[in-house]
Image (cartoon, rainbow over all chains, first blue to last red; front, side, top):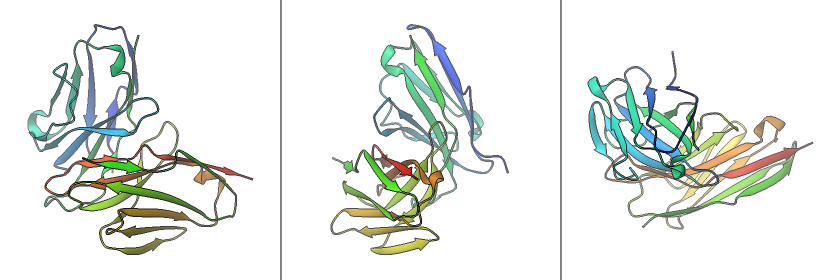
Length: 116
Length: 110
């Protein structure tokens, strides 16, 4: 069974440009999460999808970030325009939990974004 | 608010036992995760504690005290491959948000 896959693995862009990150969750997982880890800091929650609906987007830093999950399958996270402080590793995770009880989330390898 | 504290780094010797502590303060507690993350790789699930007490899984054990807001991860018979970051994470009630600590980097030396 394929795990959570993220694309690209690395991205280097200039300040002001646009970047789109993609996440393919494990098949059948309704819950999809985006997290970000800035250098030296903890992994921080960005948002959570249940199928195609945004359940919680309280962690999104600002309106330069836009996440979508059309059809409830893969998800994209767009940063437009990118700023230097957006550099970090963006993780996607998916899980099967359906009632708020914790079950393990499976993480992707992450996308390392560098804004120069 | 919420806060999760764990030591930044620890060093231990191959074959030894190491305990990684985690304290947390959060509004609404549903359970506590431990994840292992090797450099450049995805975090991988180790354990999930909901009730107080110790849960053992092979060389790894995880303990939780909800009243004290405290957990630890115990690694026995350390191996070189155990060198990694260990992330403590709290799942909050009323939703699915999981709050991560900054992680503890464990160095296992020969």
